[in-house]
Image (cartoon, rainbow, N blue to C red; front, side):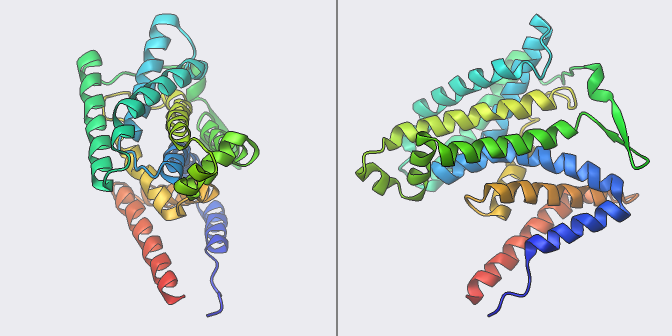
Length: 304
């Protein structure tokens, strides 16, 4: 059957229409959707190469935010600067978690992998509760509250960092995968781990570095989010679910698609929130759009 409908053109036209008729929703959705994508990209990297759905992904994000909070209070480093400390810290945490738990059950049933990452998530939440209690913490930096005027609309200036960071992380991942020896090895492992092992690639090492590196990448999200959200033990939990949804919507291995899907869902969410009396429906619409896209994709695949 001849292809007559192009989703990319549809989403592009939708974004243009929203930018014209609801510019505030467009800018807010662009910023929020970029943040979703920024958090989702490392999870997609792990899922695509290691084949692991990491349910503790959002808890690494939480841990990074608490690390940044400690650095801010004890050493007075700016939250964004603290990224250079949070990254190595999360890399080591990711390395330790992977080697001590996930690697040991990686070849078992998918349900076991889900359960172990769920257990890691619960452990992180309880550890944070023990060390910092459930009291919300906040970091205030004056520049995070500034706004800019675009076409007569006042928009938060700080949140545009989410957009820039999401694009840079996407480009960095694609550069690593396409231009470095490790990236090419990781790509080969993601496609066919047995074949990669036959040609001499150390699959275990690739899995370990990929998981640790992706965990370290959440430092960018953690550092950027700290001045704009309250920090509490379960703050990263919803981002795990939304990251998985974006990965499912974009398709496995489609990293640019995650950015497009994130912005699209962010804009849809912003439109719903801009309607008086319906702001609480945003999550429902978010997952509704996700289900619709996956159902249509499955239907089109069945037609081929």
